Image 1 (spheres, rainbow, N blue to C red):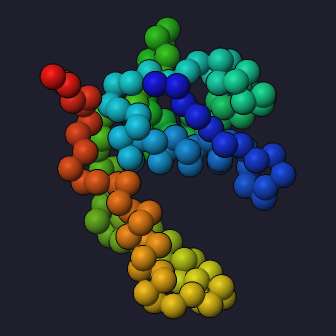
Image 2 (cartoon, rainbow, N blue to C red; image 1 turned 135 degrees about the vertical axis):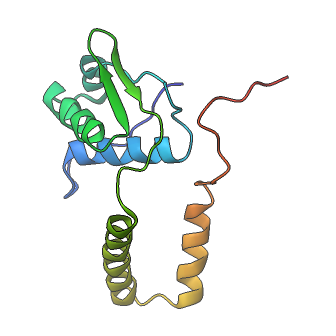
Length: 138
């Protein structure tokens, strides 16, 4: 599977963060599967026309977060899914994200039904029944 990235150099978000977030989403939605190899730093940097250090930083952040694993001499792979945060830490992070979301939604003057529709639409990609291994087609 070829990874498709949308990088916006003029946005307020750092390019490495854009790469990181898009890889997180690809892993969470099952577009990247456990054990799948990612492009080399050099290859992805050339594809995106960015400095290799930018890609390296994105990969390093995801290795630290436990989403990727670097295998010396082999490359970077999607790590087995595991929960590295305690329930309390997960709840804290969720509350922080919800607070930011609520502030933005209130500022933009969306109604609760509009917000719920958007949330449902966005989360439909994140099916909890997705497997971490590719299914065999018959």
